Structures are given as structure tokens and as C-alpha cells.
Image (tube, rainbow, N blue to C red; front, side, top):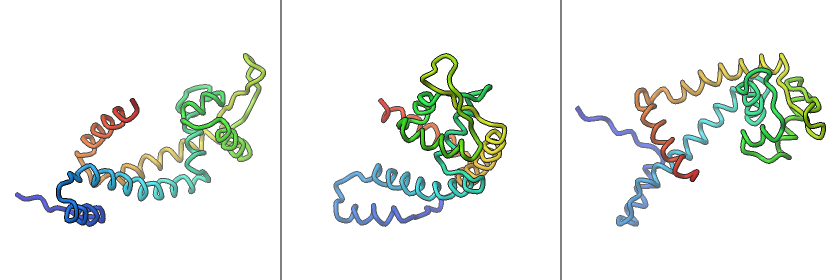
Length: 166
């Protein structure tokens, strides 16, 4: 039984390069193009879910980091910055927005009065849990066409990411 080959916009680009430069192995170019295109298309669908909960992607990331830290759902800004791989300045503006929305609270760190702790409020807990539930369902739906191949893709991307992060 032959499997029907789906074509996409990347095939046209790779095909044109194969015609012009047949000596090049363009397999990785096709993969890179598809990864970029998938990321772009999926991002808008992911952001739409967060928007339904009054959040931007970065705000969800902060709430999610606090939520998965476990009780008492509190971290210091430098821990949040490190977890989310972003600058402290960028973190401060996110925390400001989340505090204004009543989703987090700031309090002086009793162990270091030069610093403060960021804690998820009860409302923040509700919002991030609802958003995470819908986000999980949404992403599963976005990748559902892969079926059993999802586990293979996950393992392959993990191996690639590990090699790139070295």
C-alpha cells in the first residue's frame, strides 16, 4: 500500500532549489522551513487561547512558572527570569502587568529585604489552571494529525534541541 504524499509550500521552495542546485542535499532545509512554518501557524492559535483568558503568551509563561513551582506558588524575580530565559527588565514589566490585573502579588523577601517574592493569587491560580487546561487541549488538537508519529517527533526534536543547546 503506497502512502499518499502530502505537499506543502515548503516543497515548492525546496523543489526550486533542487532544480537550480541539484548537488545540494536540501533535506534539512525542508525540515527547518517546516519547523518555522509550524511555529508561526501554531503560535497564533496558541495565543488565541491565552487571549480568551485575558493573557499574552509571556504573562501565561510567568503564571505557569509560578503554578508549577508548587505551593506556596512563590518565586523571586531572578528565579522567574532564569526559568523563562529572559532579562530581569522584561520580567519586571510582566510582573507589573500581572500585579495590576490581580493575578500575582509582590511582597518583600523576608530573607533578603533587597528583593521581593512574587506569589500567585487565588485569582491567578484559577486563570492559569483554566488557561493551561484549554492550552493542553488546543495543542493536542493542533498536533492530532500526527497520531503515533507525535512520540517519534518529540524524541527527534529533543535530540536536536539537546545538541543545539550544547
